[in-house]
Length: 364
Image (tube, rainbow, N blue to C red; front, side):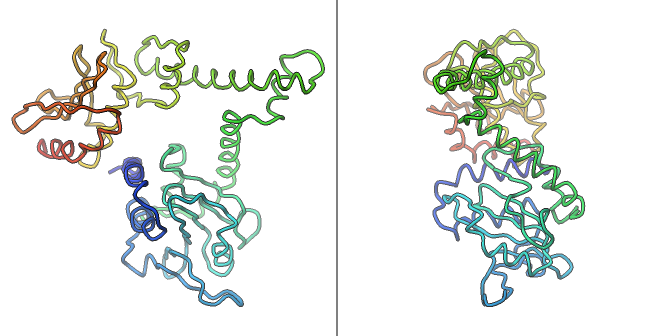
């Protein structure tokens, strides 16, 4: 699998299992160890590579343990501290990371709850872990621009110097992006004042601020919706998406950018956002067996077909969503006989993951 495919598979695992994990030990076993093994490429059962419960006495602190230490050439390179997946990450709760970072050769520290991974180094002061991460990976909302930098920490291409050199830019670009996102969700007074001053002539009193707060919030959301819709229209070959419908706006925002290279067919049949999202789910499931570019879709008036190698003789599934209040997922047996399964939401497709994978394997 390509590195991006591994990340997608890991994200799917977290999404499917997160609600069932309620302890720190469960988080380590279900999420963190597979991340170290699958994503970073280290053998979690080889103590020369990964040391669980790593101990290094610090001053008067004796016997304190860090959850994992990743080793290279006998030296500690990466320290990992874990919290349970239901717990939010707070740097003030990572005191062991601070202490161990100062007394080992590690240049990278990771604080994680198995869903979000915060990567730290010592940009501000040598051998002292920064208070803010230089890279934040959220497996439920992966920023694809971070993938090349994350890959530099993997076993096969470990490039510490390169990632440390890039850490400063990553840190501040990431913080700026998260700040912008926060302003879109809940704008602060300074943000409101900034835009109000550019469109309103006159003193900005409290009454004016109260008037413009919902206007700035509404304008920001509409701008974001329009940008997403433009990308979708481009991906779908110019199909018309009206931003006047609030429900469609919400769908556009939550669906994000749909894989544009998978939508290159110019047909008279309208492929809906819901069909595309369903296709992406089936594709993500099938990626455990084949490369993602081999899983394609063809739309028709009655259903959207998902095929292996763009071959009608290799159907994986069918989505019967066209204008119906009840939606069906069509699955096929070895004789190509279709059985339709009612689905209440797109997440119900994951319940049929085993059948989808078995169908893909049958063609190999």
